[in-house]
Image 1: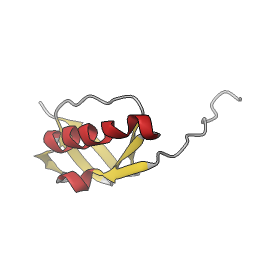
Image 2 (image 1 turned 120 degrees about the vertical axis):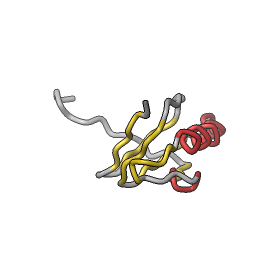
Image 3 (image 1 turned 45 degrees about the vertical axis):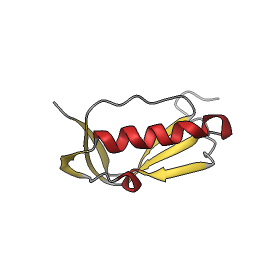
Image 4 (image 1 turned 90 degrees about the vertical axis):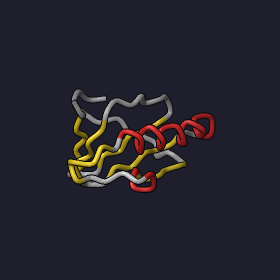
Length: 85
């Protein structure tokens, strides 16, 4: 494998959008609960091939949340996660 090359990522069999959990990408709405709920839901697929949380373009204000193993956080081009104070 060459230096700087990207390893191939296998797609996850289960995928949901953060929008399905009520998140709003306006840069002002606090989305911590939406991210936490989405990750909690997706943890159930860890032993079923893993899961992906899709974040569409937007500015996503959130507090802290814990990512788990077998979970891909996929940020679409133009998606920015902003940490709250």
